[in-house]
Image (cartoon, rainbow, N blue to C red):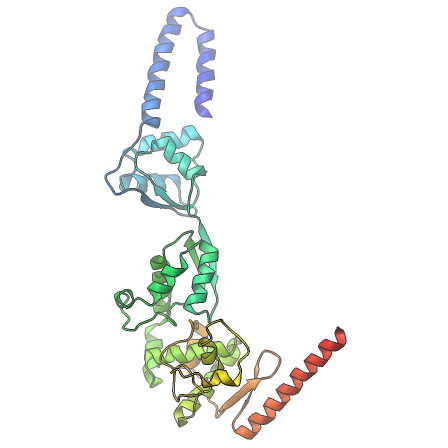
Length: 357
């Protein structure tokens, strides 16, 4: 430590001078030492509620960090904080993170906190398109130790939702997926506000204008986008699938969208049975005509754009092609042929699997 070096230097000086000089140097040493002790080890108190939340940003310079500590009242002297960092040898060792600074820390205690104390670090989190609110909460719990219950409850808290400028009973569909940076143990409120802000930034004026041209409400566009995302992960296919559902809506045909039935499954995604199609719920698009009451997931940008700018087709049906995509058809007879083709592919896959085993 640098203080130990100072002691050794002073001891060497004392060894080469006479007694009077020793006394003088010792007095100076004592004064310097006591001054350093008082400066560096005396607790500093601030007049805010404790602890103070403080973030050190990635790549932030020491001068900026100390200026902000002074501005928020955590340290009473910038010079003394610089001195503490220098003596500690920590000029370039303060970690980028979020800290909770208790009241009464000395300058050296504060440097110790910033270099090796408890902190909430910034993490990169990828939230993929099509996750429901509950699955988002699960991902965020694993990545940043966020409280899942708070996240889900807040996403359905109408008072909180209204504070964001939305008049609905859920944020399902309006939390934008993507790449984010969050601090460990971020609150649900912080995370949700960031996700919704990203959604607002995406919905530019031109997209609002396109929403008006679509003849569907803002919520209906997002609801249909969530169904489209539930059907495919292929972005190039989304506008065609959107066109199928828009064509059905136009002629009053039921959507018959499997993702809306999956949404009703209490134990998660599964292979659907005919009994599942009989569930009495407004989300059952096999039973009720039109769009369900709201989004079934958070669809992301590609699916929303697909609904706002759908392909121009006359397709009314589609079925999986066995290669991750779909075959589309204009009429039911053609659709049945595509279904048979898909079933032959499934049987062949099972046969190949048996032969390999």
